[in-house]
Length: 138
Image (cartoon, rainbow, N blue to C red; front, side, top):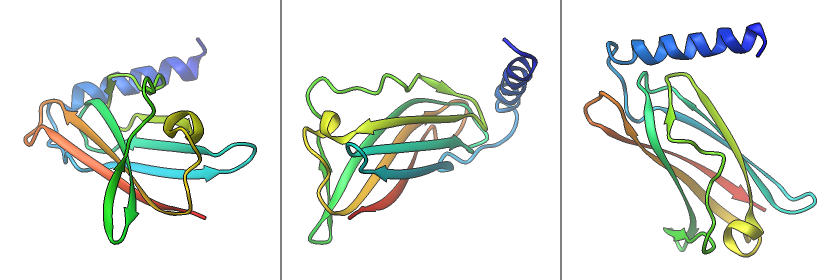
């Protein structure tokens, strides 16, 4: 482990401790999405915990807009997010990629989509939060 990794871990630990004192906002996780069709359709997701509190149990859901209504897209049986662990400290970032053919059984068809993250917030009232981002597949 190099010095910058150690320093980064110390800052994360300090921010986690601070999160028990500072008030937080449960609906403040920043999400960005990029869809790349080369060579297969990959959805890259990055997110940052800006709640001011530690969050735990992140759960992602994908929806597609059909006739003005959002309909949930089900993940393929057995699909899971190995890259997601259970707790993120304040200011901590996460990222992962989704191969749409593995996650949903086929490429996403053109249209408007929404990726929603639900999570629990440690030591905060309310103790649940959510954030969403809409994106278009052409």
